[in-house]
Amino acid sequence: MSAMGEPTFRESVDMMFNRAVALMDLSPGLEEKIRVCNSTYTVRFGVRLRGKIETFTGYRSVHSEHMEPVKGGIRYAPNVNQDEVEALAALMTYKCALVEAPFGGSKGGLCIDPREWEVHELEQITRRFAYELIKRDLINPSQNVPAPDMGTGEREMAWIVDQYSRMHTTDINAPACVTGKPISGGGIHGRVEATGRGVQYALMEYFRHPEERAACGLQGDLDGKTVVVQGLGNVGYHAASLLSAESGCRIVGIIERDGGLWDEKGLDVEAVRQWMDRHGGGVKDYPEATFVENGAVLLEADCDILIPAAMEGVINLHNADRIKAPLIIEAANGPITFGADEILRKKGTIIIPDMFANAGGVTVSYFEWVKNLSHIRFGRMQRRQEESRHQLLIDELERLSADKGLGWTLSPGFKERYLRGADELELVRSGLDDTMRSAYQSMREIWHGRADVTDLRVAAYIVAIDRVANSYRSKGL
Image (cartoon, rainbow, N blue to C red; front, side):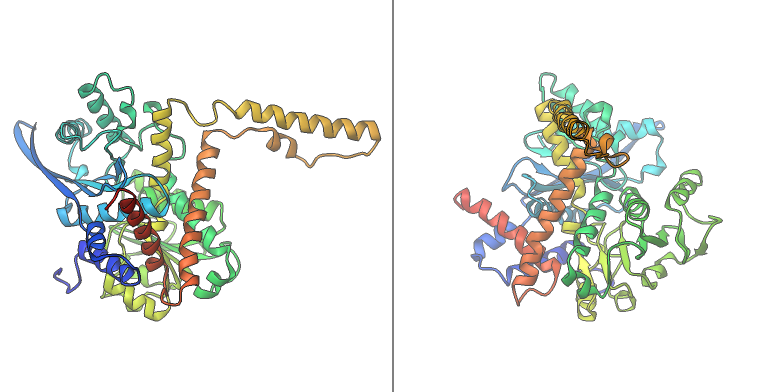
C-alpha cells in the first residue's frame, strides 16, 4: 500500500481486474495466468557524460504473450519504477485485446528527467538503453515493439530504429521494431495526434447513444460542453485542440505542473500551447486567462467533462468526493485510483476508462507496424482508382442532366470532395474511428446487457479478459 493508504498503481490494476473476473466463469488457474506479469527485465547501464560515468536504471516488462509481438511504450520520467511499468504493461494487454490489436502487453521505462540533459546526451543514453534491450530481443519487430510514452517521442523512436538497424543489418523489417517514428523514418500520418483523437472519437461515440447521455445527465452532442483538461502534453493537447476546434467544446480549464488556467468563456488551446513552448513548458503568467496557483483544485471545478491526461493517481481518496464533473474520460493511464473509482461510482459519475479512452495510440501504432511490414503506404494502390470511378459517376450525372435538360447542379464543393480519393491520413482516421466505435459497442453490450455490470470499466475488463482467455484456450492452456 502507498503512504496515503491507497493501493499502489499495480495493486489498483489488480483490484480492478478482480472486480471483473468475479463476474466471469474462469478457472482459477487461467485467471491467475492472465493476471500475472510474465517477466520484467531490469537493466542498469553506464554512459560517459560530462566527464564522468552516469548510471541509469531502466525496465521492460512483458505482461502477456498470448499474442506476439508484445506492444507498449517507453516512458522517461524520474519516478519510473518496476511497479508502475508492470501496471502499465497489464493495461496494455487489456487495451490491445479491447480494440482487437493483435499484440500482447508490454511497457518500458527509464528513470531519467529528460529536461536535465542536452539532446546529444539523451541520444547517447537512449542508444545505450536500446542496445541493452535489443540484444535480449526485448525490442524486435516480431517479439516486442515499443512506442513513445511520457517523456519520449518521434526523436527517441528514430534513434532506437537506427540502433536496431546497426545491430540487425540484414533485417528488412527493421523499421517495424518500434512505432511512433517520424514520417521520414517509416512513421505513419496521424500517429502523433492518435491518442488525443482517440479521446475525441470515444466521446463522440458515447454521445451518439441516448442512454449514455441520460446516464451522465448531459443532453445533445458535444457542441457547447465545458471541459477541464489536466495535462497539456501530447495527449491532452490534441484532445483539447480537436474537441474545441472540431466538436465545439469549450475548454474552460487547463491544469499544468506549475498551476492552472481558467476562463469561463473558453481558452484558446493553441495559444496556451505556444505560450508553454516559449516559456519553458509552464502556464504561469499566461496573460489571457485567470491563473490558479494550485492547479489541482480545477479538477474539482464545475464542468461537463473532465479529462485527466497526464499522470496516474491524480484523482484519489483525497479529492474524489469533491469532483463535480458528471463525466470523466481517462486520457491518461490510471488517473483514478481504485478507492476514488468506488467513491465516484457511488456518486453516479460516469467514467470512460483508460483501457478504451486512450487506445488511439496503440491502434494507430498497429497501423504503422502493418505499414512497415507491408513496405507500402496506405492508399498508394487504390487512391487514384477511387478517383477515376468517382469521376465516371460525376461525368454520367452531368451528361444525363445536359441530355435530358434536367437542370441538375451539384452542390458547391461536392464535386471536389467526392472526387478526392482517401490519402493515408484519412484512412488512418477512418480506421481509428471504426476501432473506437467497435470497441465501445462491445463494452456497452456488457454494460447495458448484464444486470451485474454497473460501469464501463468492469465492462471493458470483461471484454478484454474474455478475449485474452479465449486466446490462451486456443493455445491449449
